[in-house]
Length: 266
Ligand SMILES: NC(=O)c1ccc[n+]([C@@H]2O[C@H](COP(=O)([O-])OP(=O)(O)OC[C@H]3O[C@@H](n4cnc5c(N)ncnc54)[C@H](O)[C@@H]3O)[C@@H](O)[C@H]2O)c1
Image (tube, rainbow, N blue to C red; front, side, top):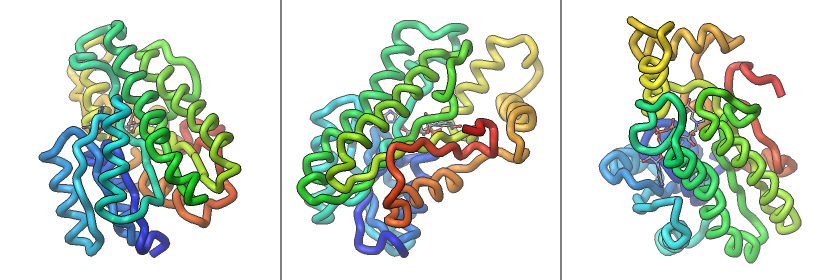
C-alpha cells in the first residue's frame, strides 16, 4: 500500500485510461479526486473507489482553463488536506467530429493543443507552488507513442503528444531542485472511446478497411504492430503511473515510459 494516506488527482479520470489509473492508485491506498467534465461517468468511478475502501471526490474540471485547474487543486486540498500526486491524463484526438475528416482542420489542431498540451501546463502550474512549498510531489503526464515521431495520419494529435513529452521534461528540470518528480507515460494501443473514434476515422477514410468493424480495425493494428502480440489495457498504464508516482521511482524524472508491448523501443 505505497499510497496509504496520500491524495492523487487524475484528470480525465471518468473513463478509459484515466479510470484505470484512478483505480490502481486507489487500490494502492490513495484517495483520488476525479477531475473531468463528464460528471455521470465520473460519479461511477468515485463509487467504485469508495467501494474499494479509499475516499474519492468528483471535481468538475476543464483542463483547458487555468482557473478550473486552480479550483481543482483547491478542492483536493479542502477535501483531503494534502496533495501528493497529479496525473495529467485528460486528452482528445481532435475537435468534435474529427473522425469524419480526412485531414485535421484548424479546430483539431486547436483542440489537441488546448487539452493535450495546455491541459498539462495548466494542471502543473496549478499545483507547483503547493508542491514546491512542501518539497515533495509527483506529476505524471499521459503522452502517447504517437508523440515519438511525426505522423502523416493526424499530425495534430502526434504533434500535441510530442509537445506533452517535451513539456514534461521542461517541468522535470524546473521542479527537480524542489524534490518533485515529473515524468510521462506513453501508452500504445488501448481500446477506449478515444481509440474507437480513431478506428471509425480509419474506417471512413481508408478503402482497405471497408467491411471491417472499428474493433476489427483496432485488432488488426494490434497484430501488425505489437511485438508482445496483445493490446494494452488501462490497468497496464495504471501500474506504470503508480510506479512513477511512488517513492520507488524517486530517482527517475524527465522520462517518458512506453507502455506499448514493444511497438516503440526507445
Ligand atoms: N487509448 C489509447 O490507445 C491511447 C494511446 C496513447 C495515449 N492515450 C492518451 O491517454 C489519455 C486518456 O485517453 P483515453 O483513451 O482514456 O481517452 P477517453 O476519450 O476514453 O477519455 C478521456 C477522458 O478525458 C476527459 N476530458 C476530455 N477533455 C477534457 C477537458 N478539457 N477537461 C477535463 N477532462 C477532459 C473526457 O471526459 C474523458 O473522461 C489521453 O491523453 C490520450 O491521448 C490514449
